[in-house]
Length: 272
Length: 367
Image 1 (tube, rainbow over the protein chains, first blue to last red):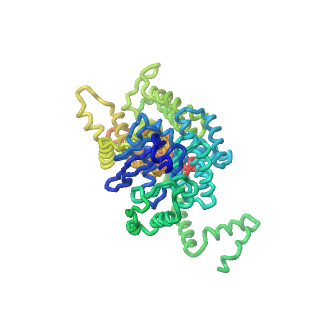
Image 2: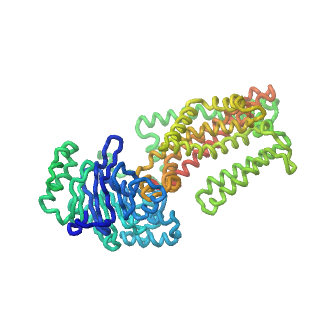
């Protein structure tokens, strides 16, 4: 999904997903998914619920092994279980989970620098200082470092989750619904913050969102998923009003249940 | 509505006045509560005075059968006269300071460990305390060198035996139960099946059966000349039994930890044991404190069943004392009341500690 100019010749993209398929029993969660991003590019994934967005993310981070296809991250195929190389791959990825998944028996700063403390790459004092620095980046006060996650509000927890995701300065940032459950003002603020962080650090960002406007205006690329397949993908600059209307309809189809989704024009090939 | 809308009356100045207000609000609030209050007072008035009369006013502490036959109340003289037999069983009379000291050390270590978990300065001493304390207790109980005569463990009995069986039982059943719970959740079919079969079989039979098997059947399978100590067999039986119950308690806790927590651990490529120790278990175990302590309390009381394989635990020694002299036999109510009081004291302490621990750990709880 590189920009049109470089599309013809893209020798070494940062992440390439090719023909990825993942089944859970009889359910096909991902069906022949392709994806291609260069370093520093941003991608928004949208789609109705149960489209396979989170599963794709969890395959990339290595929580699920792929049934077929490949995920090439920085030259390594990370789609197959590999206990030896996993820590090395995982260290390149920072992930924000939908429910934040903060570890509630640890303090905020221990959460943020969990990886560094566990790997022994930072002393506890350094880790705390680093965490406090990151708290500043995500707009939280230094005092919150010593609190437990459950002493914080939902929006603050989300910020701590983002701080944790970026704490090891990952090359790839995966965000599962970073603004879910937040009010529009706060959503906008968080999205701006993510864009700023990504730009500053040259991070490649893949983010799941349900907001077509945010996807269009804050991300360079967009991928629409439906029923485990890629329904549409391309640079957001290529989305005109007709595209927008169609994609928004697809997205909102989720509200009318699975039957209307299947009735949607998904195999017409117009935008594919 | 207009009645409710009024502000409550301010408490009147005098103590009596406030008591009347309180009683009206809490005891005589409506006909049903008034009826309950009067009923309860009548029941207590009927129950309490005779008990006090029997247990205190008309009772005697004098350790003689003559004194007991003269009073109409409780004969605490039975407990008084047989206290050392009840507390220490058949342990040699002149050496009974040893189990007493061992018991005091054991209780001391347990209290220090439970109370000190909160304080880092005490916490680092917990493991050394046990590492030194347990051999000291074993040396005191067995003896055999440094001038202490050897006492076979078939002579051990009473409260020290009950405390040893249950505390060692808890210390070993806890990790074993945890492994079983993790085994039952494992992706490895063999491990999973083994855990499920173990848990279901052990849960499916009464403790008496397990103890009886351990005591009578098990030695039959051992080659000639190999014997495993009876006390050890009972201890293993108790550990195996309790672990099966604890395993299910822990499994409940593991299931209550949100999926995202497991996934967050995996996304960091944490190895299984690390992710369990650092992320999952602290949450899972905190959630299951009440049922875990429930299992411990029930196990503590179940240690009394070792009497069927010929070990005299605390309840067993009370029975032993009742039989020691036919003249004492009729004072069984006093004997059992004494045993019940001690059991209640220990079980109630466990329950209170569990409540304290929950409160301490609630700070990090999910809202």
